[in-house]
Every structure is written in C-alpha cells, then in structure tokens.
Length: 531
Image (tube, rainbow, N blue to C red):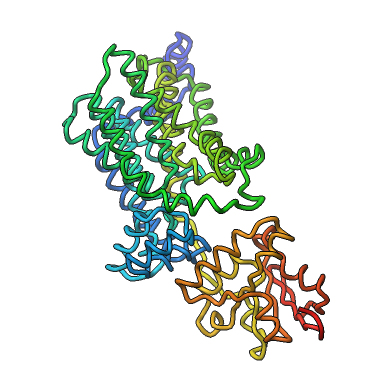
C-alpha cells in the first residue's frame, strides 16, 4: 500500500510518470524514441564517410544490376551502334545527323566498350560513373557549408525524382551531370580560395566536358554566371579568374557547330514539340516520383511535432546569397531549356533541362535547416525517408528482355515488318539472331509526313543504315519484291505509326492474324496494280 501511495503522490506532483502512466519503462522507451533521430544525426555527422561508402556500394551494385538486366531501348541502341565505329567513321556519321549527341560522349562510351565489351552494362557504365560523380559532388558542395547529414540528404534527392533513370541509361545525360557536379564544386572552391588554381582549371575543364557531352549543359554555365554576378556585386569586385575560366569552357563549342547544324534539321514529333503541355508534362515526369517521399517526410514531422520535439536553434542558412541564387537558376533550367527549344528547332523534353536536379537538390536544404530551429528532427527524418526510397529504387526487380511471343510463332515464309521505328530498333538489336534477321522497317518520308507530320524517324534510319547492320528498306522497293508480308504492332509509341493506314489507303488487303494483350500480327497482301 505504501509503494502505491508513493507512486500516486509522485504522479500527482506533475512528474514525467504522471504524463506517461505508472510504468517507468514506457516513459524510458518514449524518451529513447524521441531522442533517437538526434543521436542518429550526431552519429552520421561523425561517421559520414561510412555512409558514403555504403551509398557507393549500394549505388554501384544497384545501378549495375539494373543496367545489366534492362534491354537497350531505341536511343541506347543508337549509342551501341555508334560505339562500334572507328573515330573517323564516328565523326562522319555525326556530321550527317545520325545522332544528335556530341562526339565526346560517344568517345567516352567507345573507351569503356573497347575495354569491357558491348554488353548493356558496359554501354551504360559512363552514365553510372557520371551519376555517382553527381551525387558525390552534391555531398561535397553541401557539407562544406552544413553538417554532413545535409550533404547526405542532397545526394539522395535525385533518386526520388524523374532524373534517377538517367544514371543508368546509355546516353549522354548521366556523364554530363557528373561533369556538371564537379564543375559546381570547383566554382565553390574557387570562390572560397580552396586550392584556387586547381579549382579554376577544374571549373573550365569540367564545364567544357559537360557541354561537349550534352549541349544543354550550357545552362549550368549560365547558372554559375548568374551566381558569380551576384558574388561580384556583393564583393564590389569582379573575380576575373573565374570569368576567364567560364569563358574558357565555351572555347570548344564552335568545333561542334557542324554537329549542331545537322541536329537542327530535325523537328521532332507531337511528343517532343515545345508547347505549354510538354513543359507541364516534363515537370510532372520529374516531380511525380517525389510526391510520396515528400508526403512521408511531412507526415513524420507532423507526428514528431505532435509528441513535442524540443526547440534547438540552428541559425540561418550557411549558404551564401550567390549559392542560393545559383540553386534558383539551376532549378529554372527546365524552363530555360524550353525557351531555347522555342527559339531553335522546337524539340523539347525533360532530358534537355535535366540539370535542374542540382537546384532541386540544393534549395530544400536551407528550408530544412531553418525548420530544424523548432523541429531538430527534420534533417534526420528527411535523411531516413530518402535513404529508404533510395534503397527501394536500387533493389527493385528488373525483368530481362523477352522476345514478343507472336514474333517467335510467326510464319518463317514471310518477312516481318515492324510498324514502329523505335520498336524496330529495340527488337532488331535485342531479339535473338534467328528472329532479328527476319525483321524489317519500311521507310517512306512522304508517307510518314502525311500521317504523322514528321519524317525525323525515317531520315534517322536512312542515315543509320549507312553505318549499322539494320534492315530499313524503302517502302516501294520492298513491296514490289514482297507480295505478302507480316506486320507486327506493339502497344508503345502509337503516335509514330503510319504503315497500316498507308497500306489500306493504297488498296492493300490487311487482316488481323493474331493478337494478344500487348501485340498484334497482321497479314498484308499487295493487290495487283497497287504500289
């Protein structure tokens, strides 16, 4: 009785036990749970290199697994064909516009494939390395100004956006992001006199390399220039060395004018026309994957606030004003790419403004930092959530390429025409040789313009067949030699199809032979007097 009376008296006096019942272990568990994120943040700040090592291992393993299992899609197939050319052949092919990616990217890919072969993993290795460099650069840029845990947050943000896929795609974007990230670190180092000469040289070289891998990385240079203008105003002094480095980064650009002129002759289709709708679609593709992680972070903070997180002022953001302006300029890159597209050839897609990821990785950090003044758990909870989504992204299942069943069962006595050009590229490269050798694409620039409004794909395949072993044949010649053909249709890229409509309009008899949920196989029989 006395023990119970003592506990009652302690509870009535307003002790912690009164708030959490008469079981001390509950209060202890509650206190431990409330303090865990703060202890974890301190641990990470002291052992951030361990986290970096774990991140690198998981990133390289995860992206390597994805890259080795995923089949090459149409644009990556183009990269694979270009990687097989000698340097003089590559130069000549790019001058014709067979691929609009700059030569440096293809030379880097050629270097990897000459050592590791032409597997999907080898072709995607430059992007994987570039993605890793981007993340490490974000960590260095942020951790120089904030606690290391904030650098870890910055390097994980790209993996909850639509940019993540470009870290293992055999195109120029991953390696260009890597060079751009190093350039940002060098600019910061030059501004803060960290190994200044080395930083200035690195700034010029890395920016030049980024632009030479993807022309739209010129927006990174413009963003740095905007930040440098504010820095000059704040210091009331112009840093000539930085401006010389920025100017030096543009010197190689005139060498690319022949390739740029060739690329400007293409105009894209409905999917890539620079309109308000495509701009909104690009933002949706980029931001949609981040909705769930953002909701998880906000919910976690709300729960912690409900249980009464203690205040612990963190002070103002340690980012300088010109670094904040840099972040806003980079975050505006997608709109900048859209404006450039409107003023040039009218082709626009998310990939062209992909350097906006740097802005979106940097700008949330001052907000989290200030939020930590009243909720010190914000940074840690954000890191925990982002690390979880990053792990899920890296370890998700990837299915291997499977030849469409209707192609495997199609009659061997007839040629198989693939209706869509992108389907044709993917199937002709990834399908088994016994199937790929029977696949054709029929080219007619006139008919393509008539039904789709553009002949970009036809021109591209006409150019590519000079340099790659693809069976892309002129429509009239092929039909004059083949009275009966099979036509395969998939369920992707529907806006690029014109063949079946053209055949029917010209009097060819077309019947559906087989179908499934994802594919159709037609029989086309040319009537006398047609074509």
